[in-house]
Image (cartoon, rainbow, N blue to C red; front, side, top):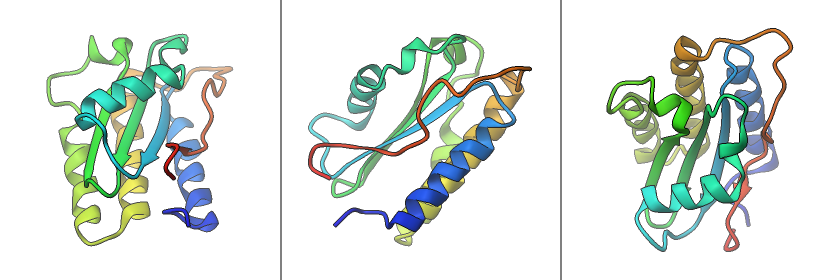
Length: 144
């Protein structure tokens, strides 16, 4: 059984679409049960595997979760990292963690997506003729 119901997955996809309406940034979610390395290293691995460094403005964001190991990370591409202050994603992580601690996984992800979109639009506002460069579907690891 998947961590998220079809309805929750649809709500997450819609949250991504809504967040991306106000920014040229791209947001993806990757979920697996266990984390074979530390969460940041796994996030980097899947960021590359999902082709997220191929966006035109290098402004992709990956939210990575390992559900059974209770680990997660948020990483941004080079275009974001050269513009934002250190610990840029900490407020987003804190917001998500409050939901995760009460077992609200989907709500935590949706809150994180919303917050990421708000933060991204400061540095990467929506542009005319913006195209969705990355899928809004949740990517699941082999063990999901």
